[in-house]
Length: 259
Image (cartoon, rainbow, N blue to C red; front, side, top):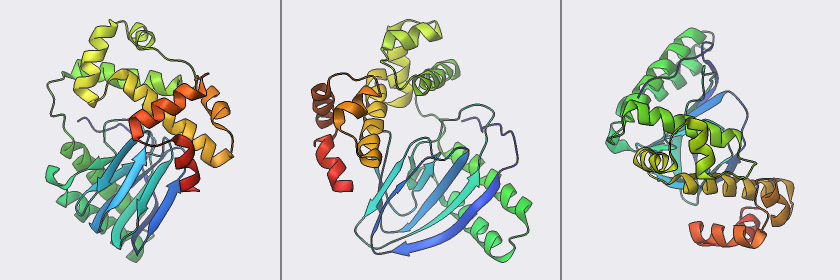
């Protein structure tokens, strides 16, 4: 995986080690920030853009803050986190929410610890922390080299498809719209998207929209029909059924539970 090209030197926002018996937070989405967390003990359930995963010891959570991140656990855990200002030349979507330990994350965990020590003992040495972060980012990209048979050209198409979807997420989006924007057929887009992302184009669009609908309901206390309309859904019953199909429970129940 190609490392992102940055406009400016990344700057440390915070770096710490944290432990608690319970942890239920919603991390909102400021711009130009990346937060990288290594789980040391226990486990965390994380959810973002319709994707839910469990992070266990040795796993790395990467949050680019493009949408709210939900973090939950009812058991004791320890994690270490570094957060940096991050301004890539072009949108960067290559690193998954969770990089699992079996991909070889030991060096990443060590670098997170090194950044925390430098930040704590030598807060004035900002370039040293930035240099360690760049090493960390390189290791993280290396751990997530594509395993699929997708070619670099196919992955570029998928990257641009996701950019288009993010830009038009409040509008009704069809697979043929995305394919037309890219200059390829809908069938070809479907094939390479599933090969690269693991989900169909429509599933990716729907999960992203549903995550944003639920977030509006939770943060602004507005009804389902109003939140759904802001993301191009004009039938709240359809949204409710789709959410239950994907996640196994009602969006309204989940909204009340998180509050």
